[in-house]
Length: 131
Picture 1: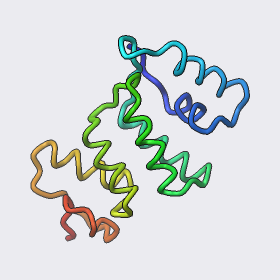
Picture 2: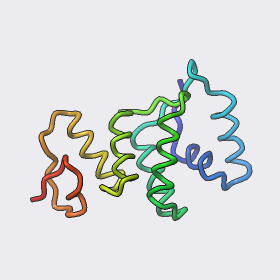
Picture 3: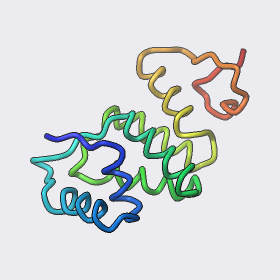
Picture 4: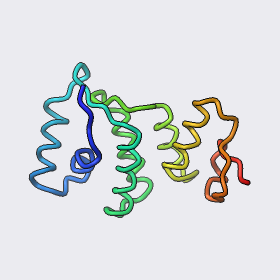
């Protein structure tokens, strides 16, 4: 198995650089298989969401759709896939940001009864408790 860095995943999703996007596409679409997948870490996912939002100006719906495609593709092994899915759903439904929802989902996975925060933006995420 190989790992994919954020820049490879972003080039594949954005298709914005003729040379690098073509190389990323070739690796992902021609060389990866379910028997030879690529690992995508949570850090890579969070960075990808940030880049698609801040640098490419994509909407939450567009970003959620991209993450959903990543989660559905059989050639990717996503770290904490279920928690990433929970975070994608929160983003897609407007319940919270991807990173906040991921923090809450990872806490719940670790056995936390709640994640304490001062961030009022997490009020729609059930895993958080405002201080």
